[in-house]
Image 1 (cartoon, rainbow, N blue to C red):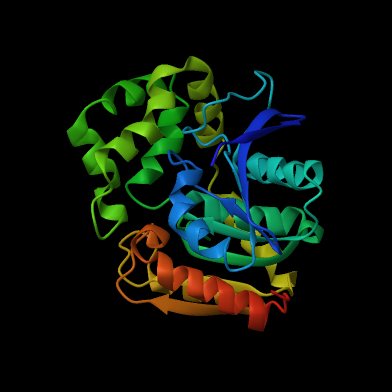
Image 2: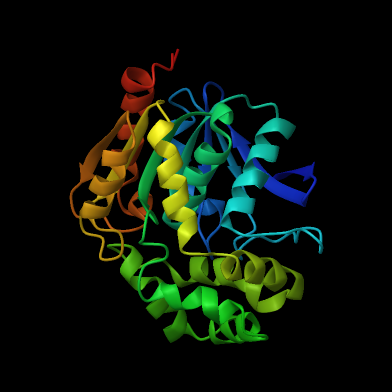
Length: 283
């Protein structure tokens, strides 16, 4: 499906909008784009959901934001709040993965009135923000020229393979990895955005979001892969224990990008959650 664009105070944001029904707003992580959710949307849009996928400024987007825009993960959450208002989406069920899951938590913490429910796949939370070895990225991003160097390195297939291989059970096709990494490798303005977001990541941000979610009483589902070396089940258990109306659904053997490896199971969990837990009426 072709992308549309919307003008926000931060700049132009591309997005995909498919299906009709209750809104699912998808939040992807750093160095991936909304195609991460293709398999889910193929299943959820026909099931009675409106699936809206903004290309957030996480380094794989192709339209840079305004040069003076302030960016950090909490600022990306503010951008999503502006996006919800601009498209008049109303309270949404936000679905987040990886660092995009941390942004989803921040969206609910900072703008609870815009969120009807939360679905988290394996993602950053609490003190696992980001996990080792990716915790080297924020200080590295503050070094002049570092993101440009990473962009050059990403042109090497072994680097691409090493960066993403542990995130899924099955290897992600290299053409997909190239697509995700090409904007940062080729566009200085995209590198500027990525540098701001990654360099603006501070350890306390995810902890502060989780603390605010102690007062978030709307439904929360943690659809969590049990085979993830970065975001282990124990992290989901700690986060769920802090949120009043949260529950965990374990996905056996699933890794970080569990929606890529197990789209049928994740889609079924989201559908059941929306129907039975969140109380969303699906025709």
